[in-house]
Length: 327
Image (cartoon, rainbow, N blue to C red; front, side, top):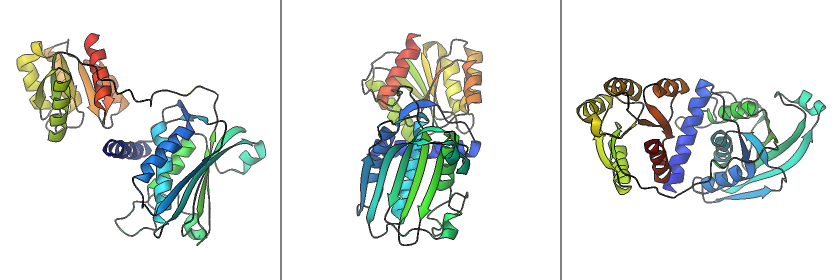
């Protein structure tokens, strides 16, 4: 539950950053039923226990092209909003079906969708519903009916933008005291599913000396424990300047650098550039919650060999370490 909560927080943060920066979503073949089932598991640990979650995933074709994290954030946002309309308990149901969208339906849609086969996802709640005036504004950024401090009004605008980026559409049907239904259409694909999200928990042991540079003390302590249990020697630095000084003094005995991006005094990019001046053989792995592609591209010219997204699992870290050190 702790790991899932951390991953969910990272996903929501990444979605907000992506929304603000208008970065394009990744384009992988995904089983939407798996995303919906994973979302239900997260909601079960998040929302009021008096609320019943139901699923009716009856669609036969479920493969769509898109971004796993962003699509899961869509369903989480809608689910959490639905729970807020169920203060005394009730039901949230997610259902799917396949349908063929013709040219006339595309013409009527407010979204730029194309004729063809689609997967329809309905998220229906038995809550308080919305007035026509509220329904007309729910996708506006920063519009919220919640009390001050209880909502930012960003959630449903992220939903709107994400579905638009996935070449789909989203509509809302709601009446006061009669509940709400969000209806999402996503175009189907025949490509095979991507196995990126299959978790491999196998730990790979190794050897060598690793310099860990991160300004968060809890992260330094945890990573040190993980690396030592995997067989590595570890030295720690609290920012880029401290890490650079350690590297200058002992770079011949440092096999790899694991560094954060955003740090006080000196950030990860500047730190790696300076390390590369000390030793052209420096090998680094960037560990960050979010990093601009331009930064990663620039750092590759100075010894960056891999990127791992926080929060990461120790098995994932062990695999990346082995790959970088072997090469």
